[in-house]
Image (cartoon, rainbow, N blue to C red; front, side, top):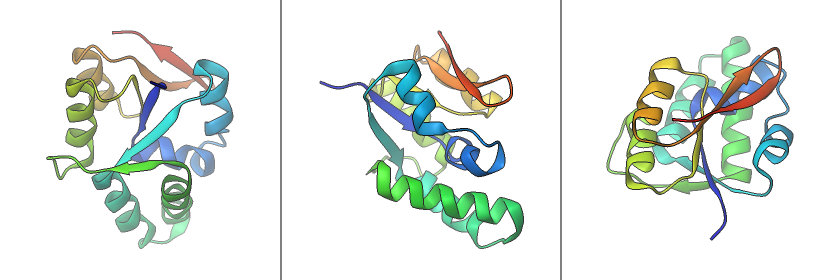
Length: 128
């Protein structure tokens, strides 16, 4: 089975907001992986994209990346962060990518490593 990596809303907005080459960074750190995005993340990106401005643009690009490059998965949870924690607790994913500190802490508590921004535009792995 290949490595599964779940992406949260902040991760999918990194390419526009933080000039992070997200998919190159994932490849550099963990090699080839199956990328997943919970349905609530897709919905959150859709809502944010309707706001306009820089955040709206970042969310719109993130939405397109998620629907083109990720397997969209259903979860019991309707809130994006809870859906990602659910995937981590179930052992459905090997890593979660987020820049959200409270979510990072919850994922680490579920014994799943987190990929987050370190420095200006590089990702790093935090082990639980």
